[in-house]
Image 1 (tube, rainbow, N blue to C red):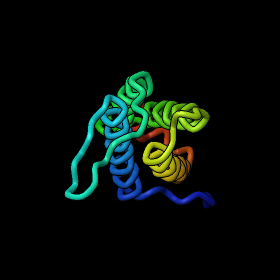
Image 2: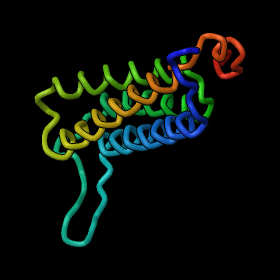
Image 3: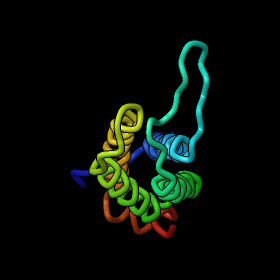
Image 4: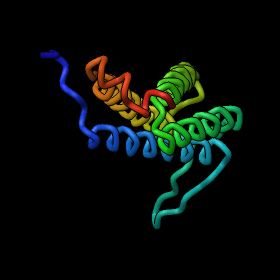
Length: 138
């Protein structure tokens, strides 16, 4: 009778997978902001202007994204999403974020949109199912 259909476990697994991927991207950005250079034959992956302060924020955000992926907690996932969106907006507002750093922020935007869509999709369950779900307690 409910217009909202229950979400499959595969959607929740996909959300957790995307949170792990997002954490890995943020952690990679942090490493590049701390000065990491990866030599790939004829080229080197690095940020033109490493910003350690941004790396610190990205490390914190990646830790929260990782925790959200590990626990599967919806509240923590929302907190991680908000933190990542604020971090992305702050990063893109900086004139020092150019080249590879800006490109990585575009990837972060795509992941944030995907996390948002999955959070909204996995939250669309009938109220009776939510009350009985142990996931909501997290």
